[in-house]
Length: 382
Image (tube, rainbow, N blue to C red):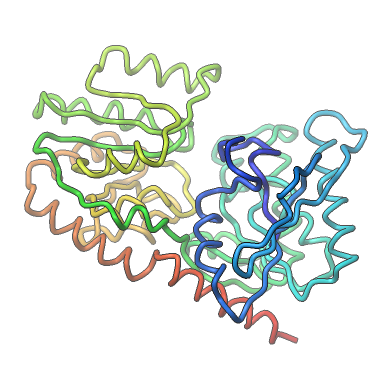
């Protein structure tokens, strides 16, 4: 399995020098937790590492973590480390000749390497960078512009694409040779939460602050909630680039709204504590391949509100396991917030149904079993 170590490459996954590499996106970490005790699989976890440290090459159950040393190529900017890691990983794969490859994401080199490996391969599309680049009108030589080109290159050359939602499948169907739909897994810690709302509206939003996450929409939509429930609080957990115009606008929007609280990057313990008293969780994204934050809130027994963008309707079923609103519609999001808090009994019904659905679809065991079936199917393909 090809992964990217956040201690080596800082992107939307936060690096953490206190943890042994590789530090992974939550969805990948949760998947490995489900796979590590399966007797029918043996998996090497490969990642580029400029200077591997003692003890990084290790076993955990049936998982063998292998840091692959590399040198930067003589190219400017991100190109040097990107192609350095890619070439080192390709050399390792051609030397060891694995039965198949599972590449995690197109944000960095994993998908690119799988596409060039000449080995049966699966690519998981975590962030649909082509869609994000289009919606953000990314410049051709910006990170998103270049990443979207590499994503298109990889999609048409791997054996199949693991899609985390029906939306993902639809978006890649013209390029992919074969697709599987398997949702992301949720950490068992979220299922342990016992939600007991405090009585006042306590809204949580767990995502980075960015244009495509549309964070400011929730800030503005919360004005009507505050007008009707003056003791309400809206809590934001996630990174914010305060040097970016959108990050600056977000911070500025909070100054006149003391009921909106920005926590920044937060520990899992802090987020779990917030979910224990939350009355609802909101994800107002303009583009979303899945919506892991909502799946986590569902697992914790918290009522959810999501936009109808991308794969979110695959996570939240409107009127059954949560509520949806038309993407970027501030008025409709305001109505959904009021709907949840005016009728606590209905909110509790939605929360209970969401948790039951999460137990059925998003546990590490269920998702790992579906991945094992996918691997065996690829192995049997001609």
